[in-house]
Length: 359
Image 1 (cartoon, rainbow, N blue to C red):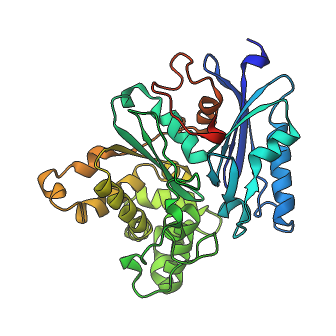
Image 2: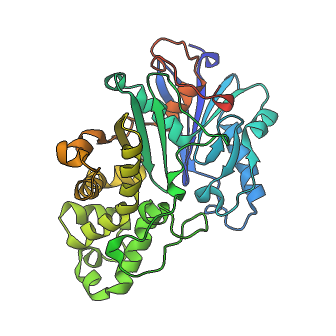
């Protein structure tokens, strides 16, 4: 196999940028992981310069001789044109549209670029699993630095988008303050607005809720697993250990954090009964294991769908699953997006279809 037969794949997340070469026969190879150019890694640079560095990083990920590239990009983008609207983790509150696909084509015109949202890419890989080929619709939800979702109709191979080329930006839906927090001002989202789902249920959102909990009751916090862990321990590792040990403080914290997301999933299942599976993925899900699923199921069991929850008590448990690392990989999904749709087994027939940038 020559490099001409391989596809350069890149997954741009809110904090990390992964790149590799991929082919259906050999899978991923030459994987490189580094920080994403963002307002976090370059706080003193204007967004215009951060974006330029992003284009440079993506172009550098395509070796000489490789003619196709699939990019999984962690941002709200128009899948028809490749225009990026916004990315709170990458660019903060900046919302001036950016023609990323056009910039890549101008910088490396010899490369056939294929650009998809990172959640779409993860969904394409998850949907390729043989055991999912009989599903009607699959909804993938990623919980990480940000939160988003995508739905694929496996019968038609369609990821539907609206007139702006968007679908599933659930992280920026308005959310009620979780009941466990009591009277408190709506938390601030990374996008600059208050009271979004991601302000509570994302990785940064959970950390902010922990800080609020500590400030409200420092004595209880000090006596909990968090206080005993010490300042040198990472918050993520401490939260996982506390949940594994059955810490009440940790369980209450996660219950509050997942309540807004549970409300969104409940509504999705009510409005679209053809959703046969909702698969959870992302850094928070991987880091906390099955605790996120259990917390969501507790909300959905406590307040489920009218009549359905009573007549079919396991309705939520049968639909809500958790992916393991490597089962919904945006890098592989980016390769699937760039690969010829009629290749054997990749992607599953009928081929997932998006107009514009997907092709």
